[in-house]
Length: 144
Picture 1: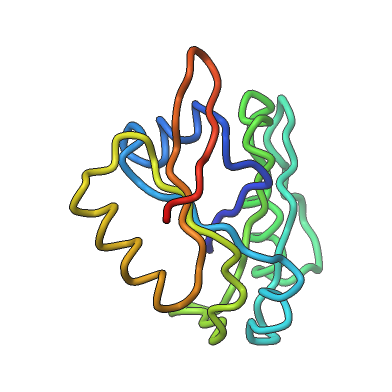
Picture 2: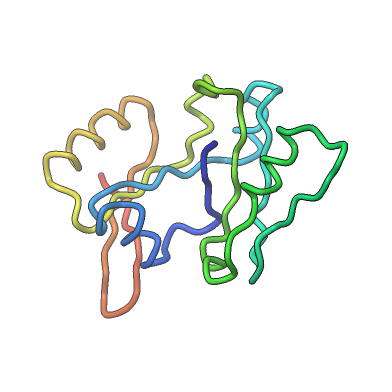
């Protein structure tokens, strides 16, 4: 299972998921990513609700029930606009770096990591953007 979001500029997500703005966000072209993933990989849009899903006696497969339960979150997380990717155990390779449309660096990423990431991605022709924070607004500037 892997999580994706439709947004890249939400402060709480950068605080929660990138160790207080020191990490990165990888942006994908969704249709290109889908076309390069194995056929047994699927995506589910998260459902946000006040109550958890209930599993009753059913004829559904256990894997389908697990996907259903793992596709629910409390409504307080709605701002994440999350999608979940489900794949068989192991890694799900997409095999084409053109699926990656950009990499976004947190405002507190170390200079060493910033240079290393930028240098490696330049070879792959993947754009790198550095976060800036002005007052209460996040924006990204392309690194050269």
